[in-house]
Length: 255
Image 1 (cartoon, rainbow, N blue to C red):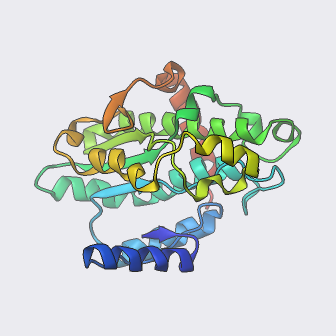
Image 2: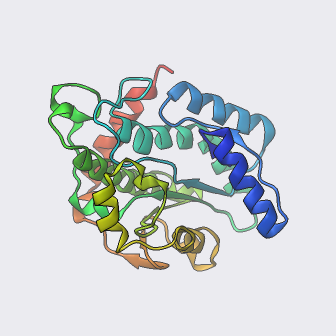
């Protein structure tokens, strides 16, 4: 269980143990710090030889505009997109080798997007802190990051599907979770009327990750509850996918 907060991770581990009798292992990971991402991937690979399912589902929504990552990126894009990209990139050798040696010849990578991706697009000038970014409302920066998650998941599917990577983008649903912590009390009150319990957010993710049909969902967008949906058409554009991938590669090439 990769997480930034040891305290929150331990609480989740204890809850899992109480409900299932099974133990998870904590892995320290701060997606807003690329050095932490690299350290987490290294620690995982020192302890494990296989990785069958990777959930890229960390993130945040609508933090104060002043927030940037340890490396100077917009906090939402740097955490939600770049951090997950780098973590997955570092784990790709393990994922590919697992696919090659497993009986079903595939592994699954599920990247969390959102219904808000429909309102997003990519403005490369806003990925790092600067004048262009500071002119954008935080809710638009969030939508951009969720659009970026979907674009990335589709490009991962195109590039590594033949090597056994099943990459999907997930809309887990509108959930009453800690993700809402940066909203005003009025925003939260109004939005909460249309939110679902957090536990329901696992349904689509688990369907994509563990069901038999999930093995055939490479390059698909999954929506509540456990169904294939049509994403914003631009997110499927291979030109957009290539441009984002090349930008992401450039950011981590010297790390």
